[in-house]
Image 1 (cartoon, rainbow, N blue to C red):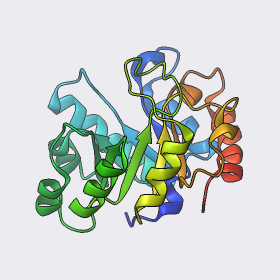
Image 2 (image 1 turned 30 degrees about the vertical axis):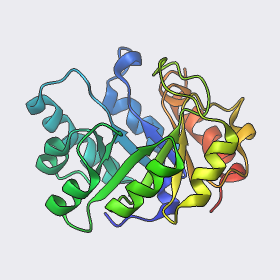
Image 3 (image 1 turned 120 degrees about the vertical axis):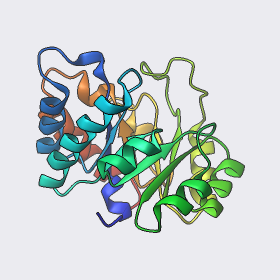
Image 4 (image 1 turned 180 degrees about the horizontal axis):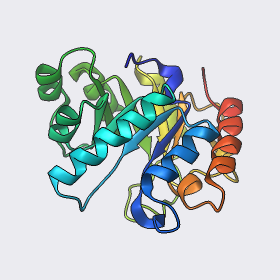
Length: 213
């Protein structure tokens, strides 16, 4: 699927913490109905075989809504499942190695917490950046925090788009307005909600009012 920075507007990252009442696939479908524009499938405990099978089904679902699916960290699963791309952390497989293997149409996202890391990821061939944590995150409690000013500096230091991530909710999203990000990435603000579809719809409206399109 062709990458466009507009698809980063409302970026949902999956988390099995709230699976039970619904399956993960059902939760993501509700999020897509609410207006999510990008989905990252994150699985830390599944075997590679199970992760790949799940990714194949998730890709079918996301593509029904015209939304790209990328895989967290695992390049093998991303390639085997035919996902649209992968997102890698600072200590994961280098972006340049992934780009050589996958070609120019494969979407590669990279985490950046400093201007130096952001510029290095761009030079290596990343398509977009995930920048944060901008707020305390219930998902990654040990995540290194960055300020709104640092977010602004990172977004302004590169030509590729960036999404802000880390503890973002309807209540605090306004605090990062004007920082230059192309979208917001959320986990619990969508998947911990009683009504996932409504939560996604509300967050999309908020995202439209604070991002740089």
